[in-house]
Amino acid sequence: MKRFFTALLVTGAIILSSNQSQAQCYSAVQLDGTNEYMFTPFANYTFNTFTMEMWINSANFNPNEHYISLYQNSYIVLGGWSASGSLDTWANGLNPIAINSGTTPSINTWHHIAFVFDGTSQILYIDGVAVVTTITTGAVTNNAVAYNSGLVIGARHNQTTQYTNTAFDDVRIWNVARTPTELANNMNINLAGNEAGLVAYYTFEDGLGSTTVTDLTGNGNTLTLNNMDPATDWISSTSPVGGPVQTIDVQSTCGPITWIDGNIYSANDSTATYTYVGGAASGCDSTVTLNLTINSASTSTDVLASCDSYTWIDSNVYTTSNNTATYTYVGGAANGCDSIVSLDLIITTSQQSTDVQSACDTYTWIDSNVYTVSNNTATYTYIAGAANGCDSIVSLNLTINTVDVTVTTAGLDLTSNEMGAIYQWVDCDSSFALIAGATNQLYTATSNGNYAVVVTGASGCLDTSACIAITTVSLDEVGLANVITLSPNPTSGEFSISAESYSEQVMIKVLDITGKLIFESTENLGPDASIDLDLSGAANGVYIVNVSDLNEVHSIRVIKK
Image (cartoon, rainbow, N blue to C red; front, side, top):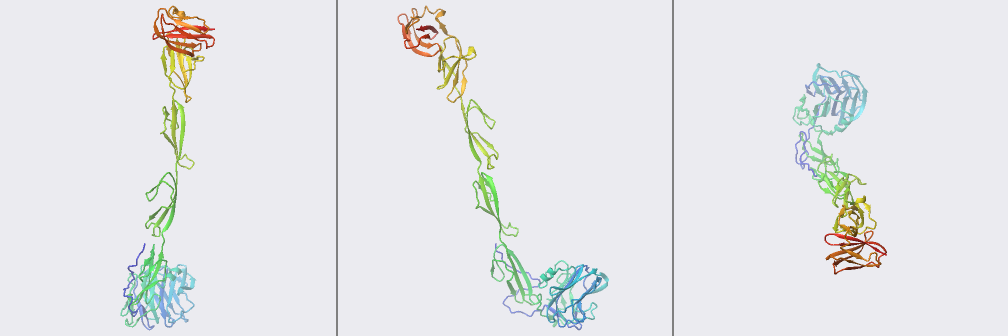
């Protein structure tokens, strides 16, 4: 961000064209040491601690001179009445009441003099250096009745003696103790006038012809020139704060600026100056010094880790890791510059897995649901259950296997409707006892009773059918021999079935004693049509021959030997 210097506020300054020649500059007052002085009634202030500052240029530093005499509510003096011409002080109520600099400043030279009492010590400074520091007890005497003459510069408080042949510039009276750093940092520059504890401030820029020196604090302690010629006693000052007005333009930016000199500055600078010739109210130059700080944007990195996705401060949703995105808070840094945040995001995906299950009839899964049919859509999430801290999402792939336990009945024939299975027929009336050898899909009952089949499907699932009642079995012992005849019986293999008083199409089945079917055929039976069968290839033993029509089944035992 580039900020341009547009205006400079200088107390009492008039900005003039910089190509003018320098005008006569009046920013100091010269006293003659005979009878000239400056005076103000001054207000009553309490000086528990204090500071007196002044820039002076003396022609001789004669003994017995008063530079500043404050005789209003307190009695405090800064002068030079020692025979050596060194600086002396006086403050009623303090012990010691006076201190001496021990050295005399050079004549005809501007010097900064400061007298400070901080509550424990009196200190006298010359040109920013503490030349004497004296441990002090007591307190400054405050008495508005006894001390009521006002503030005098250049003479004794009663304005009758101890005059000084001295030029004055920049006098400051404080009711606080200024620190060594404050003195050093501010003695060469103009103040604003509203600094804390500053009760009177004179820069002597009222200029030629003026009979007063303005108090720039706004407290009204204006000095009046006494026994002086305003046409000749205003002089040009060469003190650091006299003559040209010195100001500092403090700039703090987040990027290059174009300053009042037309130059572009892109780095910190505290040396550049610009002079408005004759620009001060006194007719002196107004010199501006740049104090520029170029701040940089603050940078930071937002280190994040998230599962699957993350919505960042830029409102974007990130589904993959990212270390290039940035976001700028305009003016968001502590120094007023931008705050630039870089993203360092790691996206970790949730763990996906499939639970493959196979069950007979029903299955209770991890979600506690009971599934009776196959399912490949159900999912279950273990929150933060993955090793990476993300969710573990399990998908179900379930196959529910069933066995068809229905049975088709045709006469004495019972047929399981499940294909390609393992079969075992059982006798329901004998506590579901296994029928020996009855392991085919088809079972033909050899006697009346209740029968069922245990089916083991290809999936490995096992189930039992309902019991099927057979009530139509009729043996030759129950009186059917006169209807159907089988001979010879016993037989060596060949035999015939005939009927004297029956004529119908019948189903012939031959089973071994276990119920296994070894022959099946549909034949016409009647008085003139017998049925010939041959068991020559069968093993010797007992066989059951079932002859059935639409109404009943006739079973005949035959013995092969």
